[in-house]
Amino acid sequence: MTVTQDLSFLSLITNASLLVQLVMALLVAVSVISWTYIFRKMFAIRNARAQTEEFERLFWSGGNLDLLYEDATSTRRKRAEQNGALERIFESGMSEFNKVRASYSGKAAIDGGAMLDGARRAMRAAYQREMDALESHLAFLASVGSVSPYVGLFGTVWGIMNAFRGLANVQQATLATVAPGIAEALIATAIGLFAAIPAVVAYNRYSHDVDRLAIRFETFIEEFSNILQRQAR
Image (cartoon, rainbow, N blue to C red; front, side, top):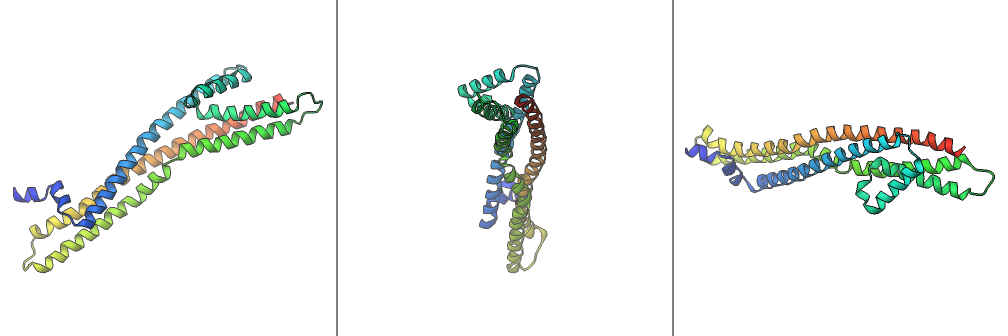
């Protein structure tokens, strides 16, 4: 019973050296932050995908683009969060296109290339802003996934060093003597893996989802540019 109590997780953590405890605390804090970003990113990507599908359905339903633009603008004025990423890209391009078209009002010659270039630049700028928002915190998850095992391994190495240093004062070394020190050191590696594995899985999954959304955004920009080009003529 004594050995079982001495080798319980709580006992091993509380009896670990100060440096190993600091490593464990750091890894636990990083794991909590990582899980927070994992859930936030999961909901953000899910909402972005649903909003993109909804706007694509409205856009390709054959409705009037000016009416769709007015609806997007009014929605943004009421509550910006209701607008999806693709809708904001559309709004940026349509807004710039209308501004350039208004500047040519009353003129005989209309530079269709200038109208299209302005709209494309506006959409590309909006696209970059949306991608920055979708990719936020992914770098943190990648760092956690790659660094946490080594941080835990550092705590393990340090704990094992202390365990073997303690054997210098023992005349007869047994497994019962060295086991607690090695066990408490290995907990640091376990916590490091616990922090790293979910971060790596989430990073790979979310990176794939963001890439898929990026392809849909870029495809929409090209298709919408073709529509604006026909209107410019």
